[in-house]
Image (cartoon, rainbow, N blue to C red):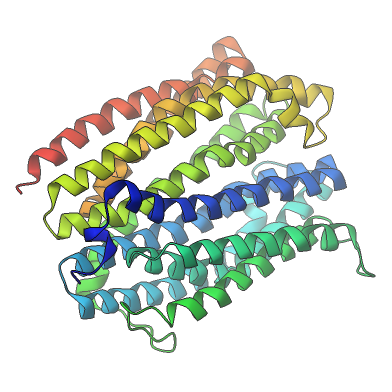
Length: 444
């Protein structure tokens, strides 16, 4: 494995090679998130609210898919760095088996828990039915999410970022094309509204899945057959060490979003819609940084396995500079042009008034968050994913939700958004402490 670019290519060039394709594909995914909501908003404001209400459970689906496959990616990259190709392939087979089990779990959730979940927020029959329909389609037909994400992360772990870019980007573009056709009923098809948006989503995911299978079968580092999923005892243990904390770390976002919806809906239903729009827009800022992190983690993991401290630290420092630059740019855009961003979603004057304050205030937390995100890549790459989980719990549960409730209770809706800034400051203090501890433990 001495020829692997993860251990030989200059760090600056390597980070560009590993991260830019992933960042590009995630930007396309962010574009899909926004375009999808724009089309839904054009159909009706009720439809946009329905998608916002369904969003937390949809986030949970992605939390499991991305989290567990992040664990698989971490194990594969470390084993390849240590020259253990057979063990790396065994980890891939195990990760694939885990994904299939998770898909079956979400089929059950979609069938039996969609309506109880929606009923926690709304009693209006039309809004409730729209949300449940959207959820059931997205959850019960989510096999494409799991297999496509598995293929992307496995390829990234071997140093391949071009094919993951094609996998994710092509699926998102396919989705964008199908959205207006199915939502509004073009080419003789019936106008399906929210149902059409959900169908377009799973079609795009399945398209990504087919491409992922095609590319992974041709990877020279991982020997893998999709007809032979398995669960290896040692591999599952290693995957879970990073995967479960990653799931919790991302799944916490579901709890946070659901709790924030419950807090802001007491002020105004449109506050929930505005918060949902914020989440769509912020993906344009966070997705590139997550893409950077996805490219950074195999570099750090490989060189940790190869016991090359200098390359590992050079990658982390460069990643920090790039992430901070991206997030600061996002803050500037959100503060200068909030009305233009909200107008994309056909926002009413009332929703615009709420949304402008939401975007301007929450975006102040972006530069602070960038530092924590890059520090977390070290924890995941080393196999200490539980530290990432602790940071996320502190940020989104321990600090954010209580702060939002207290600020809203005493100062009103506009003050609720400052809870994000408070939470990121606390998260930065904790992640910095953990980062220094991890560096001291590295004995090479």
